Length: 172
Image 1 (cartoon, rainbow, N blue to C red):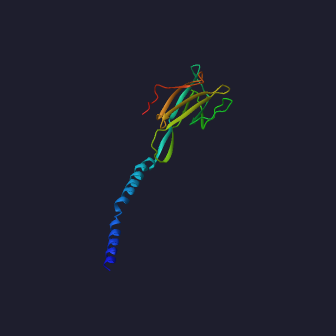
Image 2: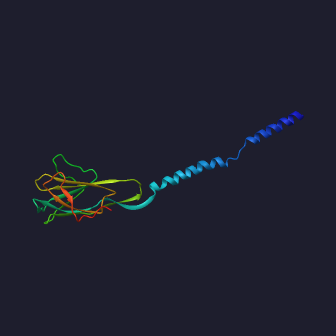
Image 3: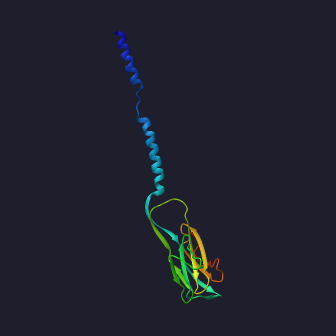
């Protein structure tokens, strides 16, 4: 009988010796998960706000150094659509007044989430005088560009029709 008692004690000791407390190893995966979740959360944190997509654009259209009235000016944000016939297509358009002036308001979008990273926005103005070829001005800016742009536009150069006016505010 004595041998059996020794054998049972040995088995009992062996079983208890292999059992380890599991609190330590479980805390490391939880800590790692906590760091990952809260480290990445600010990249898409709910933060309702407005972002500028395009500046306020204003300017004067000239042809042969004279203000040009009645020119349809189209503004397009992003990649502009164009037809094969050279006609301007755009999201919104205005007609120049008697002094050749035009203006478009700033474009701002409401977003629920703030996303980190650089965003390059583009916009285009297309000038369509009655019965003539279209002239185009294309520009871009990081995060919607400057708050406003004042332009001087000449219809003689259809490739890049406008230049910034010296009074145009600079990029912040």
